[in-house]
Amino acid sequence: MRIVTPPEFRECGDCPIRYRAVCSRCETDELAALSAIKTYKVYQPGETIQWAGDAMEYVGSVVTGAASISETLEDGRRQMVGLLLPSDFVGRPGRETSPFDVTALAETVMCRFRRKPFDELVTSTPAVAGRLLEMTMDELEAARHWMLVLGRKTAREKVASFLAVIAGRRSFLSKEENRRNIAFDLPLTRDAIGDYLGLTIETISRQFSALKREGVIELQGARHVIVPDYNALLAVAGDDSEAEF
Amino acid sequence: MRIVTPPEFRECGDCPIRYRAVCSRCETDELAALSAIKTYKVYQPGETIQWAGDAMEYVGSVVTGAASISETLEDGRRQMVGLLLPSDFVGRPGRETSPFDVTALAETVMCRFRRKPFDELVTSTPAVAGRLLEMTMDELEAARHWMLVLGRKTAREKVASFLAVIAGRRSFLSKEENRRNIAFDLPLTRDAIGDYLGLTIETISRQFSALKREGVIELQGARHVIVPDYNALLAVAGDDSEAEF
DNA sequence: CGAGCGCTTGACATAGGTCAACTACTGTGG
DNA sequence: CCACAGTAGTTGACCTATGTCAAGCGCTCG
Image (cartoon, each protein chain N blue to C red):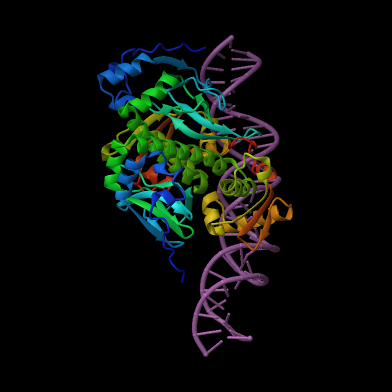
């Protein structure tokens, strides 16, 4: 049994995602309006944040942790259609229900807004609406990029692409020296990675082993990864090296 | 050599997409502002509307025809990441370049706005910004749905899903009687369908033949399709029948 | 009539899925 | 402190869906 982490940031001023989330363009008074309808909630790994089809009481931002957006076929085949990391927004204003399941992958803190008052804020506050449009367009672009991965890449390229995404969210990669020896813990099980990439856990496992054997990655246990050379990883992923930034 | 169709709709009042496009919420004066920066252009099948990486001079709406948004790997593997049909919006306000190629699939009429003045209109006109946010969210949802198709469906299910999307854009399917004998011409070659579904033309062809053999579809030539029973098609696609509407 | 393109069909190859056994942790109770 | 049960991951042997390669069909255009 894990201990629930109490959120240490009641105040937006201390918030780790203050300058990347929906609220990033808000001034003091707009922030106050948002604060008035916000609450924090902690989710445990595996816990459902939102069921597809259920009424959506809240929208909000991932503050820490990781969550998945996914869709499942009747026979159980599942595809992750979005990976939510800190500052990402969950939920669609102006909609009663979500078409996708949202699930915590790791222990995750959400900054939640009650949906109805938030809807009104979106229409009345250009700072929120504008940022939301920008974030939605970013996500659409990321989703489309991911469609290339799902539709056309080999298992090997898929796994390398996945590792590149995770490594990329940790490091400022614009500087060449930051592209060496990137180390991180995977926030996903092999199962979740399989759902993300449209592959089975066995294939994931084999590709990890192959990449390790070839020195593209180093593994310490199943979850801790070191990428000695980010550019080499991108090459394996089949990406046009600089396309992402 | 085909004859260039002259656009018969200089006036927004006659426009076939007046109530679905970015301008759908605009009043007379806002419409006038849009009209001031709009021009029409006709693209021939195969013609490029926007190259990935090139400066984006225009954004705009598909009025008639069909176009693809796609991304290509260095070795030529291509994935269509968006299918643009009448009323769909092309381009991202606030961005200098597009990360994707946009190509006409059939003869296509675009209603184009010069990008910079359009950018300003987006920030100053809530009717445009709001509609754009809604359309972007719809596209994000569609892109995510498509990720399930690409990542987890079989070739058979993919082809059926594709046909369901095309058939669905023609017919108002909320009425049961409209779900019988839907007939249409495919606006895509087998090659383009392959790029859309992440499959080869041979696999597409085999699946078309199989669906025909089983009576799920009828074919007259390679392009004209009749769907005798839309619900049966959805069943083959593996879709939770009513999920889409 | 012939060339060319879009499409179909067949024979065969292979990437990745399936099934099954095994390893390595992690936490629990005696 | 050990035994063990349960969960996550790895590896191997084999199978199958889809890709590859090749031949041929049937339009349309010249």
